[in-house]
Image (cartoon, rainbow over all chains, first blue to last red; front, side, top):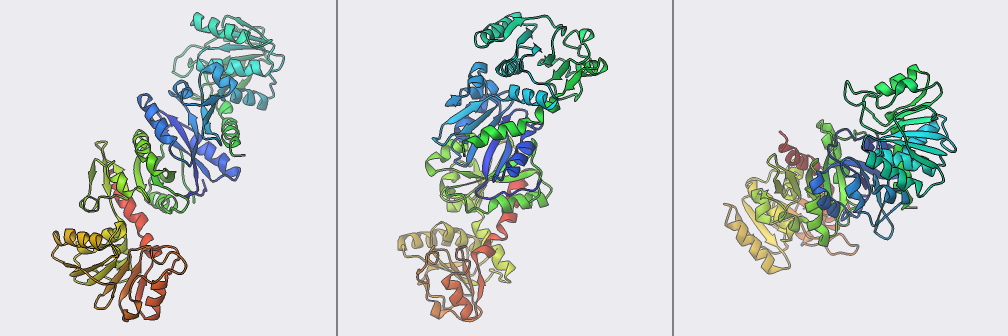
Amino acid sequence: MALSLNGDTRLCFCVGDPIAQVKSPAGLTRVFNERGENAVCVPAQVRAVDLDEFMRGAKRMLNADGMVITVPHKFSAFGHCDAVTNRARFLGAVNVMRRERDGGWRGDMTDGVALVAALRAAGFEPRGRKALVVGAGGAGSAVAFALVEEGLARLGLCDADLGRRDDLAARLAGRTSATVHAHAADPDGFDLVVNATPVGMAPGDPIPLAADRLVRGTIVADLITLPPVTPLLEAARSRECGIVTGADMFAPQAGILADFLLAARV
Amino acid sequence: MALSLNGDTRLCFCVGDPIAQVKSPAGLTRVFNERGENAVCVPAQVRAVDLDEFMRGAKRMLNADGMVITVPHKFSAFGHCDAVTNRARFLGAVNVMRRERDGGWRGDMTDGVALVAALRAAGFEPRGRKALVVGAGGAGSAVAFALVEEGLARLGLCDADLGRRDDLAARLAGRTSATVHAHAADPDGFDLVVNATPVGMAPGDPIPLAADRLVRGTIVADLITLPPVTPLLEAARSRECGIVTGADMFAPQAGILADFLLAARV
């Protein structure tokens, strides 16, 4: 990668633990360059127990004006924001923070937005459609919120933890005109099916929903990035469904993060 | 500059305030690259009042294993080291810190060493020679210590602050076989003359020593980097002295810093 690095370079940290796998240092730095910014995204490996002290120190760096937050810090970083977007507040988590012109830090959670962008890139428009989201944890909540925000007509939620599932359904139902309801892991009747569980990462994992009930033309998305094509996506492909991989979802993420990070400088 | 930036990239901060003028992000990153290291040096603008909090936070980043320290932090950063080199201890200041394999931070002060390297590059060997150092502050002390450490025979020290001058002379005399003494700003009888004061940076500044007493063949060094050739160096040139500029002194600095920073990883 060709880039300038000098005393005027502005910093964005990508904060996580472990850190070797993160893609933002390369992807986001490339986008900064393309947009003419003298800025780099650099990895910061910080243990959960050290996050508070890291945050206090990093905020003292006057030329550091952004942070991308990844596992395991998305929930605890929320508490280090002075302001957050509506979706970050709903989720109680942030995956990105920027320094505002007044010096305060504003957080957002763009994981769900990135899936919506990947769906659109694959030709799927959520407005008025029916989606089943499997997994009501952090990732599933972000995806569900983003889909509802984009005008989904009906959202089915599925999770082995029934309390977590019902809680998310109730919270979403209170703020949308979409029909939100608990549902079995059965894709029948949905235009879109999203796996937001980790099931499919480990060799030998089962498929997290009734794949034999998938019908031709349904869009199946999986947030898992490794393997690139999970057993669910293989099954979907063989049944002539459209597929959206974790990598497809990552592709627009750097641009989305840059949009948020650079907005404060306008 | 072409470089890799990914989740495995290791960080070295260049800590100062102001920061726009620092050369280490470009220079040191280039040296890291040349040596096959996946590492970058990035600027960190930190106010003096914020240094302690910055240090505590930066030390929590497991992939940050070096810091280059510049104005105004060289003295206060000394207190953030768990161990220091002899010259850093003598000077009570560090310009570089590295994380050791045991997790502690070790500091060094290489400003004087860089001048010695620049002198050698210009063909001047300090051993057995006579030098006049003008300025007994931080920079002058570092230069004086490095010259004495390299086997200088005689060191004259000059400073408008006589107490500071005499204190440095006494401390140096106690740890060297060189003759160390206070002296006027008169270059007569010296093989080498070094300006370690800021006099010459501002337009209209006087020349900080009796330039009309410079004789052909004397080496004259000036630590000032802007202007690139100070009035002192212009006068020295016109009297057929050899000159060593601030930029000449900066040239070996990145390699010297990298030697120290990378030694802990061997």
